[in-house]
Length: 162
Image (cartoon, rainbow, N blue to C red; front, side, top):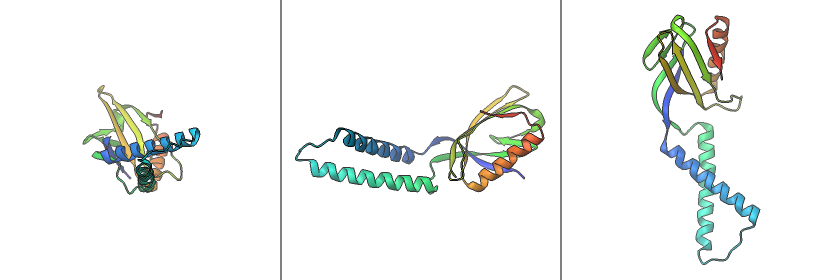
């Protein structure tokens, strides 16, 4: 049974904005805790308000991105994996035509459902190289992917996990 995954080239701008706000906020909180920043300024109520708002935005970003409710990448194609063929960039490549497949995979665990740091590098016998990023967005897709890798191992498909 073929497995279809999303291909993407870049992440959404909203993801980067949330990430910058989160990292800046937590960095400021850490520095304030380490150096015990306590200074008097007429703008102190404004600083406190901005810190509370940024912390709230960071927490909401963590929850929404962690639960998978925020689509963090821009899909630009499908990757179909099967024991007999691979469809990448709307090009069907039979496994007999594949020289090597290199998979660079994000660390997977039971708690992690959204895995967007995955990369497939496929080299066919004609010398063409296909290098794309793909996303595993659910636990079901993760389980199907693991079973497909087991099928590839059993049928001696030339792949390696880097």
